[in-house]
Image (cartoon, rainbow, N blue to C red):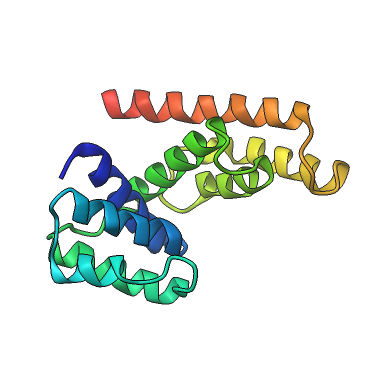
Amino acid sequence: MDDDLLRRLRTEQARALIDHVDPHHAVMLACDLLVAGVDGDAVVALAAESARTLPPHDANRHLAAVTVELGLPEPELSTAVALLAADTCERILDRSIPAEVGTHRLYVVGHEGSTLDDLLPSVAALARRLEDDLGGRADDDLRTRLAALARTILNRLTAQNST
C-alpha cells in the first residue's frame, strides 16, 4: 500500500474515532485499495457497498473491519486530531469542501488531545462571523481568512512532525 492510501485510510480511521466516517470516502478508499492489490474480505465488502446509501454507522463498522484486517492499530487521540485537522485544511485550500463546511470542521482543533487548541479562538471567531454576520454564507474575506488559518494549521503540524 502506498503512502497516500495509508494516509487516507488513517484519516478515515481518525474520523471514525472522533466523529464518523464519510461513507463516500470510505467506499472510494476501499475501491482504491482493491486497485492497489489490497483485496482482503473486509476491503471487498466495503468496496461493494453503495457510496450513496451506506449509513455512516455501517461505514464505521466496515472501516473498522478493514483496519483490523490490515493490522492497523487505532490512532492516539492527538494523532487522530492532527490527521483530521490536516485533511480539513487541505480540503479548504483545494476548495474540495465549501468554506462553510471547512470552518465548522476546524473545530476539531479544540478536541481533547489536540496540540492546536490555542487556535480554537480563531476558529470560533471565523464561525461567529460566518453565522452571525454573514448568515451562513462565506464571502471572499472569510474565505481568505479561513485559507490563512488552514495554512497556519498545516505549518504547525508540519513543524510538530519534524521535531
